[in-house]
Structure formats: C-alpha cells, structure tokens
Image (cartoon, rainbow, N blue to C red; front, side, top):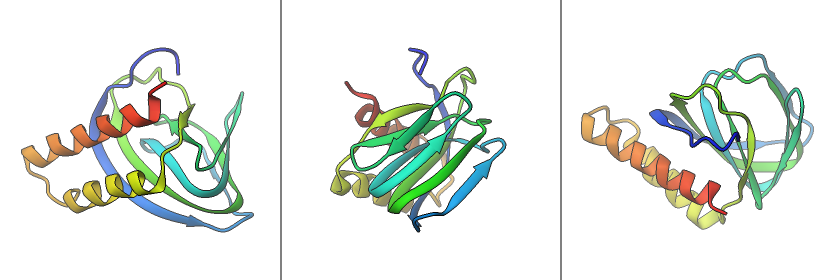
Length: 139
C-alpha cells in the first residue's frame, strides 16, 4: 500500500473458494476491493508492475478497479471478502496470512450476518472487516 489506511465503506459479500491447479482468471476491472486469504495451496496474482503469490502465510489486498490475472499454482482453498473503500488511491499489496481456524471463524460470523440489511448489521459487518484488516495488516 501507499502508507494510507484503507477506509472501508460497505461490505459486499464473502465467499469460500476451491480452486483447481492450473485455473487462470483475468480481470479488466475488479468490481469491489477485496481481501483474499489463502488457507491451502498457492495462488498467484499478477498486476501491471508486480506479482504476489499467496499461501497460508500470505494473503492479498486488491482494490476496486484493479486489472490483474489470478492463477492457481496448487489446488487451493481461500476466502474472498469483498467490500467498497472510499480511497481509490489504494494499491494492491501482500497481507499477512491467517491461521485457518481464525479465518474460518471470521468467515462464519460474517456469512451468518451478511443476509441482514438493517443498520446495526451493517455496522457489525464493518466492525468485523476492520478486525480482519487488523490481523491482515499488523506488523
């Protein structure tokens, strides 16, 4: 990142993804910002000027609007958390990894609440996203 703290505005969705080795996806413009937390295997994210390989020790932050290619290097399991941010100058960057038990607890808590659309739930989901960001960005 550029040293600027991302400002999360809105939770979009969360998904658990199983990828098979060799799968390649290309994106012209990412529809939302995301954290991708790799739980098993390896994924490679290639941007214009850099490549980030994720595994259980490293995740990735991808801002909305980013063009990139995602290649599965080994059969992989990951969690993708999609959201909108208010600072469009954010850049893709590597994140800390997260142990599978902790990542799955975030996944379960967020996915259980994600279908409610009341005000208190929106604040709850934002708080969970910021807690997740704390773990993923802490040094």
